[in-house]
Length: 314
Image (cartoon, one colour):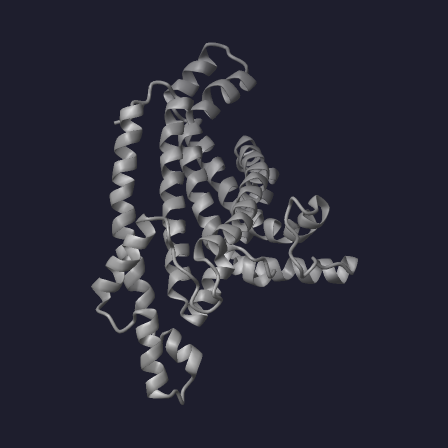
């Protein structure tokens, strides 16, 4: 296990290095730059030149990248060009909001989607299955921003309530924090619960036709024993893999939801950094997202051995 983790971490380091190059070039492929954002259309050429030299934009791209990478490896992600704040502090603060949103969404989506998928599989072809399938179809077809807007409108019209506009962290006030993230979490969770439910249903229906299930039934084992001790354990690995993909999708959907509900998370920070061409913040934020995705994949792979000791990691 230790050797496997060391190999994966080494491979992840190489992947992160390649991703940093892609991120650096991708950020600079966006039309315009911070100088144009600051000075506008009728900018003074002398002032523009001075700003480009100040930000290092007058240097070749490879030199800009080497300078940035050297600082990052030393733990210095620089200072925001537009806000004048340390990038690491900005990204860390925003990441805390996004992690809370993603974790709560994953828990709620699992709590809704897995039981619905099991219910649909048990009653395949009957009324409960058709109702769950309708929910899945609606959830998979509806964009996340539409779900969020409908929840906002519905709560406002039906209960004359809307979430507070000023964000309050969890350690400041648990009740206020939960009231702020409730609708964003529900918006993301409904979408992912539909995907969960559909995946679990298909996995169980497919597993019911396998030889080990028919053998367990032929031995006279109860339906409950066959279902929970044999069938669910065997779909555990695909379910965990799907859970990792869902978590990464939640991080992507956070960009829209955080903007819609005015949450100061990483997605909203990245979006504002694109608008202002704040390269240091944008580069650091995207690199953090890549690293999180790699860590999620590593945790998913390690969990295979926990679920099924027969699995060998290599």
